Length: 61
Image (cartoon, rainbow, N blue to C red):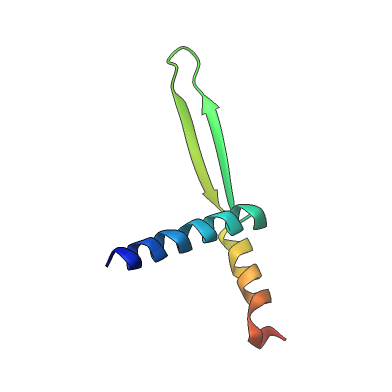
């Protein structure tokens, strides 16, 4: 069971790294004035993910 959890975490990290490198995800931060709060936003470009998946598909060739 522990091995399965480690494999799932490893897959999630790899997908995250590849996704940031390919432009699927974008992380932005904004700081509010006066309150000291920082907003962190994660944007997912689902159209880019779909087009890249279609390009990598063996059936697309």
